[in-house]
Amino acid sequence: MAYSDFTFSKVKEAFQLTIDEKTNLFANIAKVVPSQILTTLLQENLSFAIAVGTEKARSEFITAPILSEVRRQLTYKIPEQSHCP
Figure 1 (cartoon, one colour):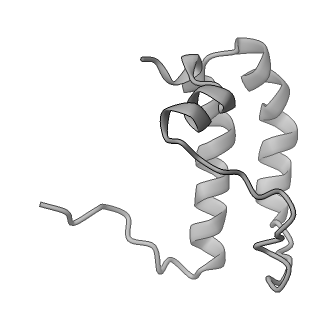
Figure 2 (cartoon, one colour):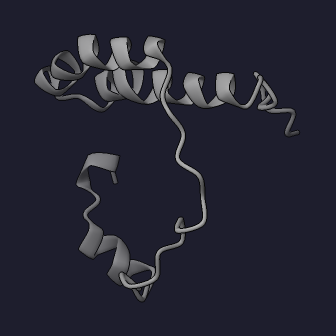
């Protein structure tokens, strides 16, 4: 099944999940300010990624810059490659 075929209700049913919408898991987490680089990239690319409408476009123009920002903010403590066998 393609990723785009998944819906929240299908996943919930398939994995027999119970959803708790009252607990705030991130209540004690400090907010992080995005860098100017990320802000600019998202401003420039968001409408294009949505207009193209493919998962690949969203991945390359939205998700990848966010993951790069996380890595930068964690001073590159996330490895570039997985060392899984």
